[in-house]
Image (cartoon, rainbow, N blue to C red; front, top):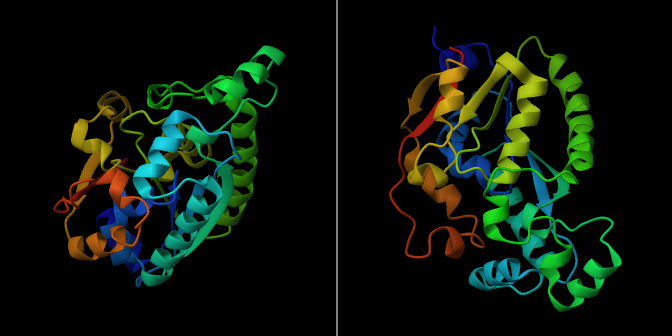
Length: 262
């Protein structure tokens, strides 16, 4: 019996741990839409908030592309979109309320950093440039936040353990986005062998940066090519993100690839 058949036949609860408000649907929307009427599906999204002004140049530019100038309104609309999409596909959702990497500020900046930050907000941000948070390198100050996320997930682990079996999905962190790296690291520690990894879309289009991890863990792949039009419909529900992610047009959907200890 293959893994998906086992999930459906035994109605195993499925939990998708999403770094951001669109990641689970972008990377696994076809499979989620298939499973949603066959078993219990939950999407837990970790980074769902912004911090107050001032914003970095990256944040201002990103929001402008998406048609916004106020991060609170931007993220409120993003959360509403996610709620609508999740309800449309009949899955449960939970927003954990952590701050998105591009908006994370230093908790205790020095006096000189505070002064310079009034002139150039980058001085008071943990990841001031796009290349900083696409490096896969987690800064020291994020460790306290990571500890807090673990506590939330540990209580969640207890909840999951109340089921006879369950299956947890998380990103492979292809593309080395820091928030994706944080999520996979926590999931590896807490959920172990139960994990199924999705390939991060659209980052996978630029190459698979997780090949070393896949080989080391001896993971096997499986591909899901059904419900692709449904996935396209769901992605279009994230209207705030389309201009930044797909500036020309939403491309044809490609089959989803997952990795697990099958």
